[in-house]
Length: 265
Image (tube, rainbow, N blue to C red):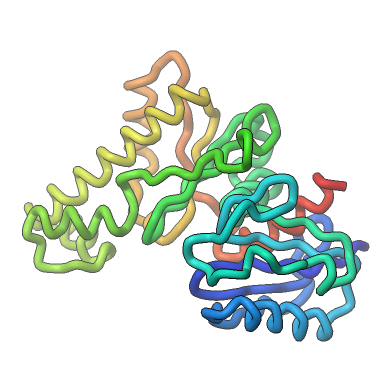
């Protein structure tokens, strides 16, 4: 059994666990707040490396990644982070991947994109993320930036629509609950947010002719999957796609980065 020490590094937290080559988490998942100084992030890696026995190291990280290297400083991480020599810290073979692509790969190998040759995972959180599987491979583009686009159906967008329609609440889930309860203004805000989501799915399906969309992130909980799938099929009857919730959850980046070790190998 191969033991892979896998990290998921984002702007708010750094999480890690030991994972095997089949995506099974072997240790407790632990996390710490992300420091605002690159050297402190490097120190977290060094101290964590001393706590475990492992064969390989994997990293899911914010930012554009191409050919196992960060292509610049991620927007939500401190200057100098992109220059950390991960191989020197862990003294083991390293796999580095964009966090959205790592989560996508977990969903593709053991989640709701399993068995799908062409699939897309969208992250619906404070902002949006996108990862694309094309013919069984992660679509990367010329420098790893495929999917690095903002869509108008993030949490920020739903809050903005709440303001537009004078909704009394600013929390996305409260707007959703008000809409379900019959509040007319909240209903207008949610309906426009849902229409934006549907337009994005329609565009992506027209471009990539996908089989399944998997939706992750906190706002994936407020999507009417049956309605969206039915409407998408009516709008694009020649190449309908199914819309499903992602199932790998908050540990998808950790799992996906570890599973990518096998792919890189």
